[in-house]
Amino acid sequence: MHSDYDAIVIGGGAAGLMAAIEAGKRGRRVAVLEHNDRIGRKILISGGGRCNFTNLHCRPENFICENPHFAKSALARYTPADFITLVQKHHIQYHEKTLGQLFCDRSATEIITMLESECRDAGVRIVPNCRVNALDRDEHFRVSTSTGEFTSPGIVIASGGLSIPKIGATDFGYRIARQFGHRIVSPRPALVPLLVPGYGELAGVSTEVVASASKTTFREKMLFTHRGLSGPAILQISSYLPAALSIDLQPDESIHIPKRVARAFEGQVDDIHHWIPHVTGTEGFEKAEVTAGGVDTNQLSSKTMESRLVPGLYFVGEVVDVTGHLGGFNFQWAWASGYSAGQSI
Image 1 (spheres, rainbow, N blue to C red):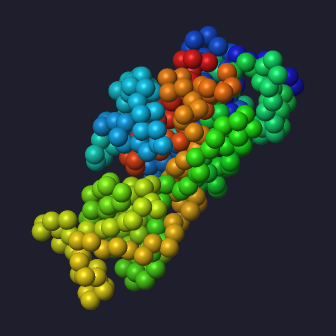
Image 2: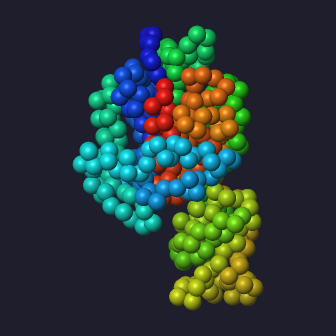
Image 3: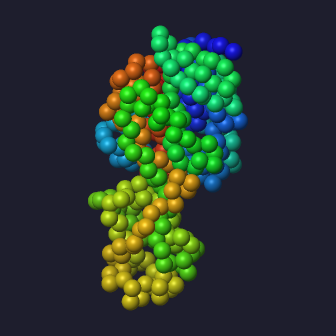
């Protein structure tokens, strides 16, 4: 099988689908190649199956990147309000949980159905179970896959990062980026629980803390696990490690430290406001919600996400060195970066 398209999107996740929809709306013939048997696997499991699809308070400061200015352009061009408009158009009921986090009332499948419907309306072809074996470029890009060959002048790499390999995460996007001369900022697990030995007996206990690393602080809940620490405060600060981590176990007098925690720390910690846990590692990509690092943003256009090295080659979403905080920010980056590429390709 040989198929010619105006644009080919590799990866049917949030960023890839948004790029495909926007390109299709502009009259482009678009194909989305997805190696899983269905699109949006990560959307389905996100937010406990309810999909934390954006955050009302999305700002560039909520993102980590070697170039702190890179995300500004895309985030300004496609905002949380824009995505909410799309959700409302499809009559999806949603609610704000805490700190601006928006979730579906019912199920993340509604977001998938919405994206599939938008793809249909825009004439986008989705090709599931399509494994990409090679990507070459002469006059056009040539994609050799398990279901045949596709050619196009424009390619969007939306293959995600390394987090959650059980739903098909691979290093495909980084391999393609390197093949075409791009630098990769070393990928590492982010929004990930930490391994801290010695507190297994506290597993299941949760308490409000302030977690700090490299001038960044988060005041949220921390959860003790059998293997270490988790909960929103820890997931947030994990993206800033390996900087030194300090935890204030009693941010103010209104916080009552759980008795079990107080007992476990008695005589062990000099200052409960500056506990420095002995972190031996993280739970790895298996448990990481996202991947930090990725394609170097200095080699991409912040306005269109197009490669500065290879015209017609775009990188969007998690494969790029832009990592959001916990709470819907990574989805907003996916929508915004996908939108920007779809408007250009």
